[in-house]
Structure formats: C-alpha cells, structure tokens
Image: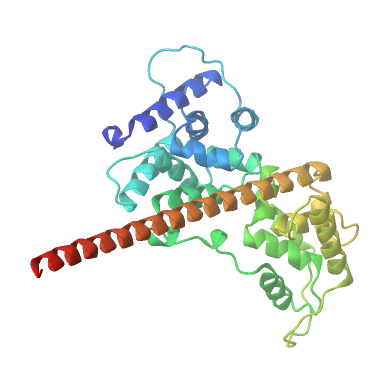
Length: 342
C-alpha cells in the first residue's frame, strides 16, 4: 500500500507532472520514465537540481523516452492514469528509502532514489541513453542528506569495482594466457560495469551477449601463469596509446574506461576489435557520449567539492562564534568579579 499522505507537496506535484508527461506521450499509464520526466520538470525541487547538475536536459530526456517507449494515442485529459507495476515499485522503493534514512516524509529525493534503486527500469535506461552516469545522482542525493551509502544499504559491486587492470590480470590468469591482451581488457571492462559499460548500454548493447561472444573467440592456454607480472601484448599497448590520444583530444585530465573503449574500437585486428566492430557503432557518436559522461562526472565532483567547502566554512564560522561567546562570557565574569572585590 502506497502511503501518499507521507508525500511532500513537491513530490505530489512531480507525480502530477508525470501524469502530464504520460498524456504528452499519448500513454494511458504512468511509468518510471514519466516520473523521471516529472522530476526533471520539478525545477526548484531537490531531485531536479541533482539531475540538472548531472547535465540532464528535459528535451533530450523526452526524446530518449520516445526512442525507448512507443508513443500512444491516448489524449483524454481527465480521470486518473494507473501506475505501471514498475512505477508502483518505484514509489515503494521511495518509501523504503525514506524509512532507511529515518525520514517521516517522502520527497522528490526519495522518488529519485526509488528510480535508481531499480536499475533495470525504463527511467534508468533513459539516463543511460543520454550517457548520464546515473550512480552519481544517487551519491549526490545521499550527500544532501549527509550520509554515506554504506550507512543504509550495502553498495553493489558495480559501485565499488576492483581496479581495472587487476581484473585484466585475473582474466589472463584464468585463461592461462601469458600476455595481457585487448580481449582481457574488454572482458574486465564489461565485468567492472563502469563508464564503458554505461556507454555501451546507451546504444542498447546486450553486455551479456557481448561477453559470451568474446568468450567463444578465446581459447585457454596450456600452462598455468606463475609469473607475478604479466607483460602487455603489443596490441594492448596500441590500445593504451589510442586511449591516451582520445583523452588528450577531448581535453580530459586522465585516461578512463571510456577512453579505453574508444581505443578498442580503433583496433583493427584481434577478437576484441572484431566483436566491437560487429556492433556497428559510430565512433564519433561513442566519442560524444564518452565526453558527455566525463563532463557529468566532472560536474558531480565540482558540486560535491562546493558542498564540502560550504560545510567547512559553516563549521569555521560556528567555531569562531563559539570562541567569541566564550571570550565575552569570561570578560563579563572578570568584570563582575572585579566589582565584587573592589
């Protein structure tokens, strides 16, 4: 049972906007995607600010919804529209998030957390379609509440991945290969579920099928790898050079998963290159989405830094005020003591 009486005024307004977005798309139902659009339209609400800081634009989100969900013919603007089972689950997860955070209300931030906690709903696919690093939204919402994710729910492996090249070496050892290759890198990137996986999913790539296809092309070696260090194959060195070129050309500070994906896409030979070429992805469009994802991550870091700075200044001001109050109290005490013993 959904407790609508616990929803804040702004949260209810978001659900009203979600209904309008559903009608705009010609749908006779309210899905998670419409709730997301309602949150974006909220403008002054906390969730809208989080999404704005990540670079989410209303027009682009609407276009992504149209690509993922076929527009309907419903145009009657009266009566209630039913929530889909997934949308109901979003509302339930929002209530659960509020309970976990010990809040007696359900606000727009909880609605956004409800969407992000489902992960496989249409709303999250909309964010992925726009190449938005959506786990950042969750971190930013929790940061507004002043809590760490670990305080209320165990982080998933996708949010706390092992270092990428540790996974690359693990894959090489598993297959008894004595050189680190682009294929090991691609497998590690799919397993890590980081930026590269988000970009691929934004093109509606089935990562499970991609991993299976890659596995079919790799043959295990005969001898177990005993050496502590495994050297890089020439092809992998070339991928790393391509990745560095991509990072420099995009004006990025470091090399990440997205740049490595671009490097793999530029690879001419080998199973990894063949598997990726089979997806028929446009390199320029992939580059655009990698750049956008990096920008959203950079904005997130800037926002968190600004919040931390603001909190630090507040703490400093409070400390100075407290010291001033203590000095005043000591002065008054001294003055009274002096007059009493005069």
